[in-house]
Length: 492
Image (tube, rainbow, N blue to C red; front, side):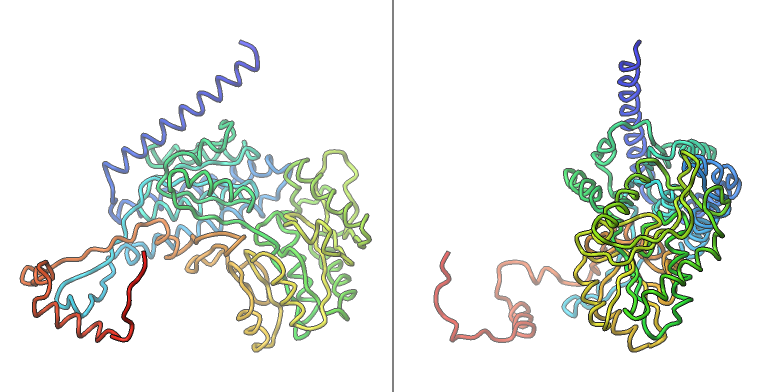
């Protein structure tokens, strides 16, 4: 068998396995459609224990996939947040699962109505490469808390992480409950084409549109956590050096490869040069004089991503922007620890102001009035996150009132996303729906209304033939009188 026929056979085998797994999970969901709270809590505890046990192997695997990633960064960003989410779901699950009593209409007073939260069935989770464990475990935790079966599609860019994650899960879950596929799946559309009961996708808006279009063939509902150009607005009412430190951190941790990283900074015009200098000092404080070989600095994940970032920088230079590197570029071939680059003088036609950067590149955009900064934000698609650095409560409230974003952190960046009692999601181009917390539980549950007629309640009084006294009284009470002056014929 030659290489090409071997690859074709492997692709066929992966597709057949995918279909078998889905059929297995569908059958299991039908056999146990609504697992008890105690069962779901046991799932979450098992997942937590495994995450803790495997923390070193997971950190090592993620570093291998990235080219280099500090173990502390992997544990802090991918694993700590995941465990916090497991703890939160475990502790609040009983309350989330309780039926919600609702009030009947006055017309049906005396009867009973409630909403019960029912597992949807089989949930598909599509995971990106930038936080391969956190963005797998987050939706997985939410889906299991809601009582669902889950199939997880990992990125082809993270094969080492995928292998450890599969092993972690296989030790505690049968594949009829949780199953993982990864780089062996040649066509990602094969996953989204399955008739899931819900799909959770994290990735770019462009791919999100494809996922949504494919899911629509089965009328599968989707939660899309996308991205976009998240602004960081620095007010005249905030210490410039502190804002620069926090924005620099958000733009450098994980080498800026974060969907909620500050994409660009809006800075008062008279403070632009001082902000750039403060950001350079901040980078030195965080990472010293170089990134190459730095044990605290993550690599750009692949050569393709590095070339994309270098092309954006070259485009900015060619069109007249000033590009300032905060440390020397790596000298060793193959090292992708690209330092933070700050861009001033950017113009709207440049790539850096058009596309989500997803890397250590920070355009600094000057503004004169808050009104101008808000107009700049409005001129772009609604972002996944918005950051405002201001000590003026009225100014912050105006910005919150007049802008839209998936979430907000005031006077820092990103921390709203790992507080799991609050929902996380986008708006418009940055996403649809939420996960995390109670809202995530609701998203991956079906809110099923249950109306119970009391045996004595005479709903038959609303049956034909029409015109009895109860019907006439009800119509008069709720509808009042029509307007006889509106006579005439409605044409068809």
